[in-house]
Length: 270
Image (cartoon, rainbow, N blue to C red; front, side):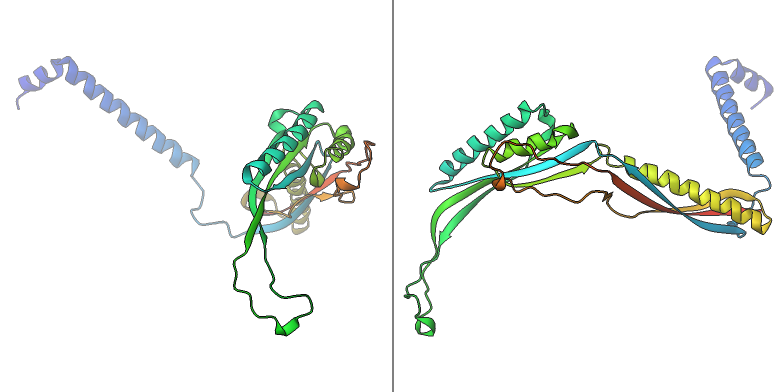
């Protein structure tokens, strides 16, 4: 290709724009590589060998802001439809009650719904027959069906928990469990405890570095450990509402929950 051909090529507007774009991209790439090389200048690709590792622990004690209460409604009848109708009527009455206590619809949910046949196992022997009684080979007979529904309620006004439990006791529901006091944001307690653990680790690292006559560098490794569920600072409670004979609201102290966290931090030292 001669000089005239090159001139004609560059006189083409589309080709000229394409070449300028390619050169611009190449320039940006070279600039990025230069910046990366400059930022890594003096850094070793090998992991830090001069380090210290410290452990930190943290605790956070917070008052709960919600209470979870669950209860069961169950009925037995000759047919599934009859048992369902009885359970539905009783469950709806309980749900209407909790909603009248100001509990939002989103805070009422069904945990389980079960339909179980009820059996009769006939015994052909009279009482006291003992070993003389032959093995009975007949089939068990279904005598009815039990329908049960377990419902959980979240009370966001802690001061009304006693009133809620007393009211449920007048509705004939079974297996009332709770209150389970907790934080609406389940991670809030642990996050606060972890922040304290990290601060504790930093304090220990600074003291150790001073004693060793070195300076702390960057963090090169970090591990955390959640020590389990919050520890309630009150006696756990479970209410059996069959024992409630009146609408008197029981006193339900909410107490506080203590959350714990542990961390291990490795610092580079200079």
